[in-house]
Length: 286
Length: 276
Figure (cartoon, rainbow over the protein chains, first blue to last red):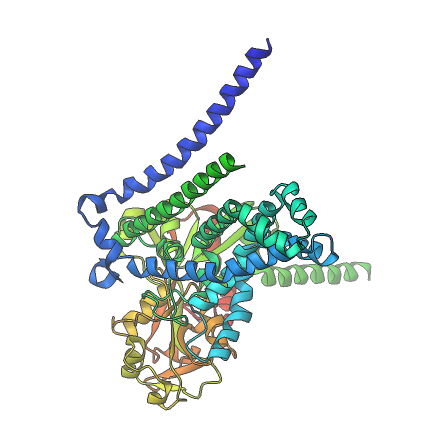
């Protein structure tokens, strides 16, 4: 009797896993089919490398790909050290009121809607960047990356903290027993043993920065150009989709945004696979 | 004596009801109606749509009106697909759009598109040639047009914008817009951007202009309501509300309301030129 229920439940779980897998693949199919005319004409790769000048019949998304990468990479450059520092502080000062407060604040920040960050960005950060550096409008790669740092850091900090606490206590106790300090314990035992968790945090944050739309739409400036400097206005793939979405269904503009979607999908799938591989590796190690 | 008092009483009642009737006027037709009107599209239209909706909904709370932006392209597309009841656009629908969706257009106001700068900027007048050169990225410093020695920050709207379409056609003569121009997604966002940035130049619906922006004379003509009305100011367009097929029921009443004296008064109050 018990076996039978177990089997049904097993089948139910398999079914739900199968359905969610199917949905992911059908989304890819949904993106591919309308984008198909682009593949058949061999235009897919030219779209990846051309500029975007609709009035001259060029619908390339190269500026958007570079804009996305510039903003995302800069975000990670800011967010990684910040997050690692915060997580370390929370971990080292484990029992103090300060680390508890920091952790609570970070936890709260994960729930802030992105539109709030966008708003703060437009009315506080953009004028600040414009007035301090005196170059351009302040709507630029730098402003967007700074605001995205605020968005992705909380996730990273919490994941880092979790991976620190997952290192077996006995290891740390051994260091202390041999006369090591808390700092030595952290640097030589905790940190090296939690790198898979750190990597997972980085990949997830990267994916979040890559996929965010509202913040970059509001403060990156959205100019269709390959950004050449921190203070250049840039457009990301996500905001490009949001801006062009209103175009006519049958227009080449609209077809081109399917290419954007496919590129984004491939980027984030690659990230998901990377996270999975890291996870599997860790399971074998520990 | 008593009958005289009664007569006075009744005449007062009658006079009052007439008075109230004249006051409520155009809103009378909404009595007894229930339901929802979904509106989306052009962002220039929003102030008028909001004012009309507030009056109708406070007169009859059984009617619910929702208003969204998105731009003219979104308005036409969504009403065509049946996602909304009224799709607003700041340009005429294209012939292909009209025939594909069976659109009906209602032009209830004329609106100018004014070139704007930050109030801190001294520049208050530009010729068409200068405007074209600035937006094409050929003039990049305010000094070249008698302003400060600072880089010009360009602001433009996305491709779905009717405001952009009219500005591009009538002010820029379908000329190029420089690649480094910043894109904003609504008239409101344009206002926010230009009022924040002292070295900005952009364009908004004249109905959205206020003290936070400074209008720039175009070929010597100020972008004011009077100049748009007289036809002197060249960068002007109609504001349209579109429906799929002939409007019926509540939607028809809403559109009719925009054309009543009261509706047109709202249009004028919000800074647009009434059509009646």
